[in-house]
Image (cartoon, rainbow, N blue to C red; front, side, top):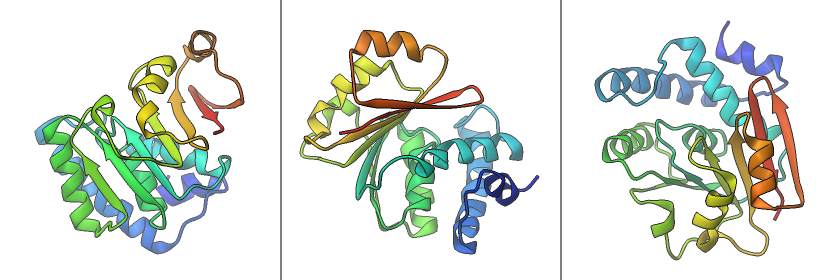
Length: 193
């Protein structure tokens, strides 16, 4: 199955330019991934699933003008969101130099002018305020909220890509005004600002 078929099966539609960009991203990920161990699985279907996982929440979250992705790694979800939403200011926070080098290479290859890559840890970010903070598989919800406090405003929303431990994390974090959308083994936690 092609990526386009996979996305359209979920009623997610993008222009040809998106698919051209994604094709370049996939080629670069496979090339860099083998050398630098960027991502666990580099077969087409695994990459397609990660891309779908990254952009699926755009179908249910409210619009935003800027976002920060904490611990972007090989690009999921932050880089994919930056490609899908070139109209939005994107900040990718990644402390590891090899991954930052890869993200910068993709940024240059795709001419992603909406994208800033920060080689830092989340808790070291200052002077950055965004509409949306995203993270996938970094740490628990309570700690993520704490680590990103300096980036939030009174209207900042959160989108965390979570697994099976979400219920315990919600109890521990004591948050309200959230929604959880589940798809397969993934829980998308959306906390409205």
